[in-house]
Image 1 (cartoon, one colour):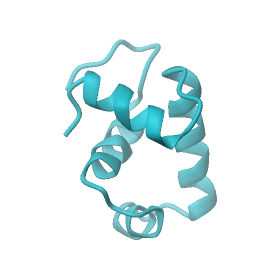
Image 2 (cartoon, rainbow, N blue to C red):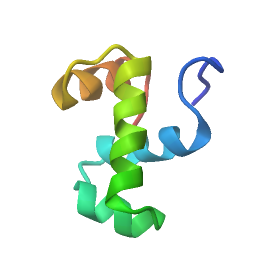
Image 3 (spheres, rainbow, N blue to C red):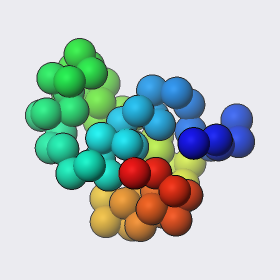
Image 4 (tube, rainbow, N blue to C red):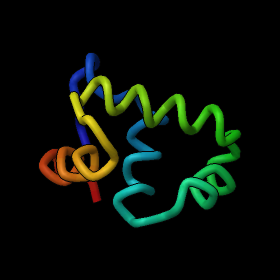
Amino acid sequence: MEFKNEELIGREIEIAGLLMQQFSVNQIAERTGLSKKMLAAHIKNMMQKLKAEDMSILIKVLKSKGIS
């Protein structure tokens, strides 16, 4: 996946991919080695960057960008 620099950073792209594979927040935290607090911060940043008001909209936007 390629994103513009003002959009998602590498770690956010990794997290987005895991979200799209329907991993839970707990599973993503365990898989990436991130604390739940740090993971929540990454998800919040992704939502702000992609102008997603909630997780379901975030998933739709990620799908439209070709994340799988």
